[in-house]
Length: 357
Ligand code: 13P
Ligand code: SF4
Image (cartoon, rainbow, N blue to C red; front, side):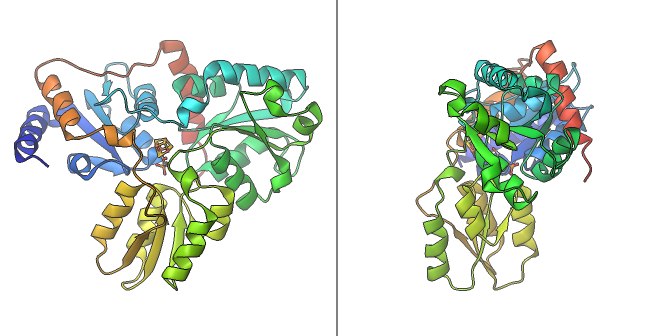
């Protein structure tokens, strides 16, 4: 990076001192991670944000939904800053609140709403999280989706009963968790397409389903294919394939290990020297893993898949601008969730934080 910019970042960081706390998601650029007080997956960062009541400013180097969750979990006097407001998430944008309200009406009309619990992935807008809280559901992340799903089924008669989960917005995380961790079958899962009348499903299909999966996906992880797994096994015999659960079901099934970004890092950290890994997640993280472990072979699962473009919008110039503005007394790019949504989203987030494990 530009040495002048690094010097400015250091000066602004020092001037802010303990008034600011900087969170960095694992998919952030190196130049940003260098200034993070803590790095983590979305679950760890939500906990860290909630555990810093002394910080006047929480600078969130991640995407919009994460900053919203941080605003909900911090106190009213704390200010959450997203260095670039254009850092959104294409998956979160696939579930608009009006669509979700309409979908719930479909479940009401089918007579199944009372036996359905919403489980909403962290990667969603605050409005969808609030919907989840209002309807007795929980938030989950990729590191606790199995616990959240079990809890949700327990609210409606257990995994082996007849109750249902409406899982939003990532169909892949929902399917992978239900099938691989809870023992449901692929036939228990249906995909609700918000662009089609009735979600593209018949009332009979809805009644028979156990997992109603929202038709959303991650534009980065959705690009890995089963072929990538076959190819890397041929190119690097003995390789362990490690992927994120936002990947398609056939990719996760073909892989050796599956887990959140934090899980992926810990697995490679703990691996013996000389071991060989193919990692299916965002490229900033995989490159850092490779650099941190020169004694291991860390391959990228598909060399053509690139960065999360919205995560990458947070760069050093934006971080410097946000910090220098705070030093000058201007809190730019504040993320503020309206009070009613914040209340109900907090109910759903607190439910997640109270899950066992
Ligand atoms: P985790 O940080 O929970 O692994 O999620 C990955 C992701 O896609 C975040 O946007
Ligand atoms: Fe959204 Fe995927 Fe980017 Fe995560 S990696 S912010 S889920 S688009």
